[in-house]
Every structure is written in structure tokens, then in C-alpha cells.
Image (cartoon, rainbow over all chains, first blue to last red; front, side):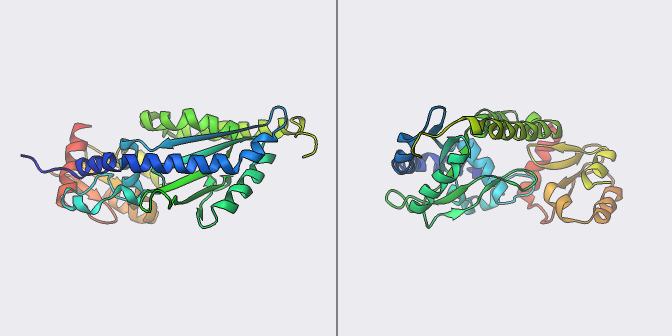
Length: 209
Length: 79
């Protein structure tokens, strides 16, 4: 019988962890929804706040582990199979808060930060290292001390674009990572931010805000 | 000239699955990390380095183990 590869072991670990990852997602999503509820109830016409969540997919987790470990050639060493763990990933469970317009973003970020004070900040940046959105990593200790989670607060148009773009990047990596497509992605992100800036003055908050 | 352009000019192609610059004819492969970390002159020297082409030569910051080397050779031969 052939020896199990590092990938085999990691896939087994993934499915062993899956119920715990799911519990972390539920917990984090519930907390984020609860703490942003008062903002949601006071949104004006045209303003939006949407909470999205996901469990990282198995193959995506393996690929991410190769990258964060900096394994040159993007191959796990078959002689070190026991040294790899998906628990080294910072984002097996994740929640994304989509906010429109941008003036609500700081408010949502501050509100959540007050609750998740001990989480580590690591903002999302573009290729020129400019901050696109706040992002935090930490544990939902009520349900897991092992599975790390992530939440982000992102401009809605950008977040909706990423919802389509990220899976495409993963499935069609060969094309999506080409220089031409990376440039196009930068252009889209720039144009969406520009559109939000242009429309923001016309989206009025509820009177009294 | 930027380091990746030096490699492309020397008939290397970028393997997106493995993040390697590969020249199948010369049987040479550079890791992305090696190219990022080393100065241009060092990369150029390795590009110009003659090999007999009988076996794959990997330019990594940390030389690949035998197991990894075997897997990468299979990947690159099949690509």
C-alpha cells in the first residue's frame, strides 16, 4: 500500500475540523450581526449593510498553506507530512461585512473593533500597498481555541466584485494571475472606488443621524 | 531589465501552479522566492550557467529535498 501523502493527511484533517470551523463561522456571524444591528436599523434610503460568511474550501486551504509556509515549488515535502497543519491558516472561518456607502464603513469598523478588541489587525491592501479595507484575525473562544477566524469590513461594490473574482481567480488561476488580468482587476477596483465616491453625497443618511 | 523579464527573455515560462520560472529545454527552474530575494546579477549568473541538461537543476533559496525534487520533476515533465 502506498504511503499517505501530506495532501491526504491534510484533507483528512480538514474534514475532521469541518464541524468546528462551521461552529466558528456561525458564532462569528451571529456576533457580527448582533453588534451591527443598531446600525442596520438606522440605515437611510439606499444605504446597505450585508453580512456574508464562508468556510474555506478544502483545496483552497491546502493551496493557501503552501503559500503561507513559503514552500518553494509549492509542493509539500512527502518526508515531512506530519509537520503540516491547517490550523496554521488564519482564515478557515471568515465573515465579510459589506457596507454602502463608504461613510458607514468607519462606523461599522469602530463598532466591531470595540467588541473584538484582542483580535489582530491586518488591513487588506492592493498591489501598491494602499489600504482597501480593515481586516482582523482572532479566535471565537466560546466555540474553538484552535480554529482562527477572520472578519473584514469592505466597501460593498468592491466586496461584491471580489465575490465573483476570488472563486474565478482560484478556478482559472492560470489566466487570472496573468499580468493583463491583474492590471484589469486593479482598474476595476479603482473604478468601483471612484463610483462610490461619486455617488456617496447623494445617498442621504436617515434624518437624525 | 527587471528580473522576471530577464528570465522571459531567456525562454523561461512562468508555471503558475508551482510559482516557478521554467526552461524545459535547459531543464532549469527558478523559484519565485529565489528570484525575488536574489540580486539581478546573481539571477543572471544562474541563467547563464551551463548545464548538460541531463537532469533538472532547481534554483531555490532552500534546496528542495529529494522527495520534493522528485515530485517537481514529475510535474515539470508532464507540463
